[in-house]
Length: 99
Image (cartoon, rainbow, N blue to C red; front, side, top):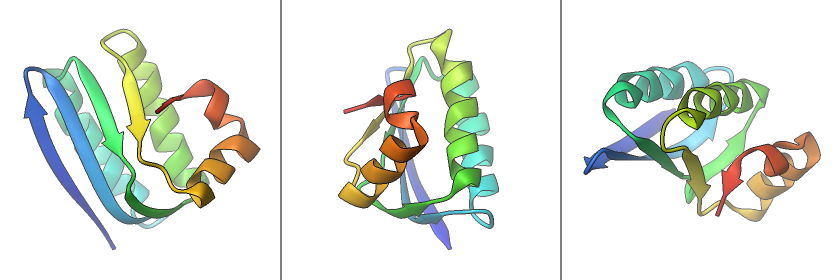
């Protein structure tokens, strides 16, 4: 199960998913991102409580990154060592803005 806390301040959206972002839950993250992007200039994803991400989740992040490149961008913060390792192995660490 994935829960997603969300807030928007001055056109800047912050999403904080909690749980696993996998084949089952990635569509929910994608739905929330698509819902929030039209009214947001930028997106910050707080991954502090994400303990796993699968290829389905990576696809959602890449799609969001492409859409938000034309706006204020997307940033992922507070990633764990295990998520960082997944990003590094897949090359996403070099593609996404991770801080």
